[in-house]
Length: 559
Ligand code: HEM
Image (tube, rainbow, N blue to C red; front, side, top):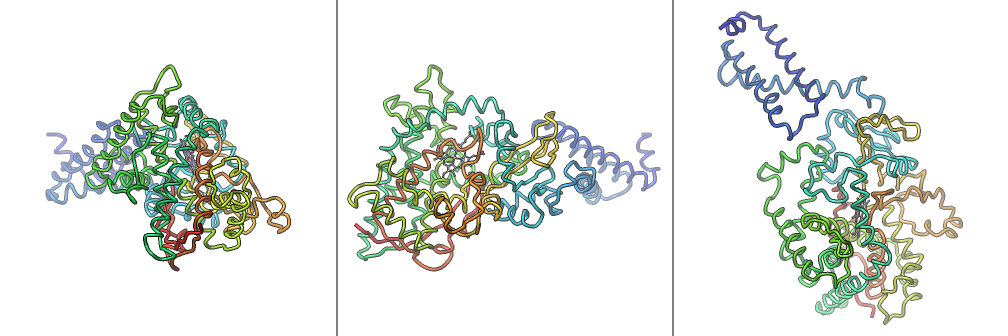
């Protein structure tokens, strides 16, 4: 045919020029239309049919059956990726004025890799130390280390959530709801279930689980026949929080305290699921694809998690409105219209995922810091003795709330090790125009993170920012010790604004009860020097929600 003749007659240079033009046009199409899994026809056409066409051209030019497709596909993808990199590094990119290392400016896969290692919080902090308060951490993403940006970005008039939350779950859970109005509507349900009055009704559940934890730990120490027994306390604190969140979200379900671990593997399926998916949230378009790749996600674990959610919800529904737990509110027992079963399941699972690792990380970090700082430890024991009689269970929330040293220790642990270390991503919506944050102009479609870990450890906000000093939270002592600067506005472990933690008061109650009870009943010290004891914080990983390692402590009973 004429086309065949033209191909055979054309010079190699003009064929190379045609290929470059078509592949560059492919790049522009991707950039213009942001094609993803919802456009399978376009994807196949642009990524497979075009290079297949090149292959036939090369075959006509007497390339072998092996070399022709290899060259064609490599050239096509290399040109698309080359154009992408060139544009992202060019002065024409809207974020060109912002400093940052080269690789993350080219691809988000670099952040995904750091996230996979659990190091995102350290990495962002180092970048801020090197490049300043606003750093380009991705092709279209900025991290900000500036206290003024907390309200500017996170408040009602700030920015909505970013694509980090896309393609995660169906139905979308509250924390991943990017539509501001839909979020506000759904948040009202949670707000009803997490008022101080509602939480009062949960106290018996918390008290029962805290007592079970103390009794389990006591019997471990006693059964050992020795005065002191080594225990991986990090795990036991997790069992407590997970069991009590299970009680509140579904009327039970885990029984990790009873079993002394996760014998059915349900909790592990939650943990692994979160850890596996989080790195891909940095390139959320990839999630629907990776979900189909065998081996990358574990369908058995996902099925375990879903089945657990469904069974627990159905079981709990049978109990009806008699039990006033968090599910009572999430399932709309108090409302004329009720959410669908999948929404109830998703919300229940969210309560457990959002409430468990976060709270148990703070419990473990307070124990960790107190074992490191003997004065602070002794002072807490004294405060407990002044507040509660030795034979009295410390479950009076009014007195717990007034324990200034206990609360200062909790604050200080959350300042140094916020359980959501890198905060939650926001975006400047298309069509909204650029967002002004302080003196920075942030263009449309830019993702923004206000970096909790960096801000809470910034020496401009807190004196000796890397040191555990609970006294900085007590005005008189702060002044006496000249612990300045001190910027409460730079402390936001529960985030800020309309999407801030819904469970803050519940978390604080659990923290106070368990810490007080633990230090009242036991003497604690690191079991051994090394990674799993006095260097526990080094093992804390940032998988959006921090994940902790083991912490072995020697325990003996005081009572
Ligand atoms: C010390 C413990 C906790 C910390 C530090 C913490 C921290 C956070 C943070 C930083 C967010 C904001 C996430 C974002 O904007 O993307 C959040 C959201 C949330 N947390 Fe917590 N959390 C804790 C405990 C809990 C507990 C016990 C619950 C119990 C139900 C809970 C429920 C939630 C929910 C439902 C959201 C989503 C709020 C929304 O999107 O409106 N959290 N939490």
